[in-house]
Image (cartoon, rainbow over all chains, first blue to last red; front, top):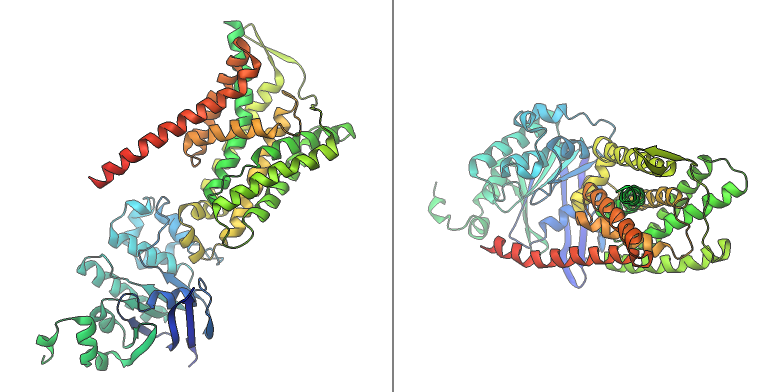
Length: 226
Length: 287
C-alpha cells in the first residue's frame, strides 16, 4: 500500500529559528494519524509545509494525490456566505457541487445562505471541514479541530471526520493539543516536541506511556490504574 | 434654476467618470491592499489613444474599445511591477505605482506632446424640461450604470468574481484553497486599468486631457473611493456623484480654478472625520 504522505528529514526555518528539525513521518492511504504535542512544537509548521505554504530548508515531503487543510482558527471567508465558502474550497477542481458536503453535514443545508462569520464556532468548524472536503483530497490535514469548541460539538465533529475516513477512505492527519481526543480518534500517532518527533506508535501504547500522560494529559496519575 | 440644473447635469457626468476611476481604486485595493496611484494615468492613456485611433480613421466604439483594452493591459503591467515580486509590502507597492505614474509622463509627452487633446463624443443636445444637455452626458451616465451593474454581477455571481472577493476577505485562506492570490491581484490591476480607461474615453470629449491630467482625475477618484473606506464600490459611486456636482457648482458659480480644491477639501474632511472616529471605536471595543 502506497503512503499518501511521506515526510523525510524535514527541516523548516523561520529566519534564524528552526521550527522543524529533521522530522520524518508517514501516513498510509486511508489512515487516521494524530500529531500531538505542546504549543510551539512545530505542528502547524509541518501542516503548512506539506500544504505548500512554506518552503523546507532541507529534507523532502511527497504527497500521493491532493491535500487539503482545515486551518487553525478556521480561517473562513467571514463576510461571504456558507455556500461561497464551500464552493471556493473546490477552486482547483472541476466539480463545484456542494451537495456531497451538505450530505455529510446536514445542518449546513439550512445555513447555506448565512454569512459564515455569523455562525457559531462549531458551525464554522463544520464549514471549514466542508470547504476542505470540497477539494476532494486524498489527505485531510486538520489543525486543532477542538480549539475553542464545546466538548459535545467536538465529539460531533470527530464523529464526522471518522465517517469521512471510513466511507471515502480519505486519510486524515489530525494536529491536536487535546491529546486525549486525538489518541481516541486515531489508531496511530506521532508526538512532536520542539521540532522533533519525540515518540510515535499505536495510540493505545502512547496513551499508556507515562511521558505522554505527564506532559500532555496533565494530572492524569489518578487514572493510571484504570 | 436652469443654470443650476445645467451645472448639476455636467457634474453628474463627470462624477460618473470619477466613479469609474474610484471603482478601479476599490477593485485593486480590495484584492491587493495597494492604493494604486497610477490610476489616473489609465484614463489619460485611454483618452489620448482613442484620439489617435480616431484620427487614423478607426471608427468610434472600436477606437474606444481598443483604448480601454490597452488601458487594462497597462493596468496589469503596473500590477506586475508593483506586486509581481513576492513579499512586496503594500506601502512599497504604493510608492512603485506613484513612480510609474510620474514616469509615464515622459512616455505620454513623447507620443502625444504636452498640449491637451480631445475628440468629439456624441454630438447634439437634448432638451430636458427646458434645460439643454449634451448627449455625451447621457452616454456617460448610461455606460457608467452599465459598468456598475456588470461589475456587481461579476463580483457577486461568477466563480472568478467570488475568488477575487475571497482574496479580499481572507488572503491566507484564499491561498490555502489554491487561489493564486498574486495572479488575482494582477487581474484586479487589469480591471482597474480598464475602468480607468473607460473613464478616460468618456471624459476626454467633455474636458480635454493632457499628460498630467491624471493627478486631478486620480485625486477626484481617490476622494470618491475613500467615501467607502476604499472597500465599498456603492459608497464610492455616491461619493463620486456628490463630488462631481460639487465641483461643477463651484466652477459654475465661483471660479473654475477652485474646482480641483473641492476634491481635496472633501477628502481631507473625510480622513479627519475617520481618524477622529477610530480611537473612539477602539474604546468601545475595550469596554
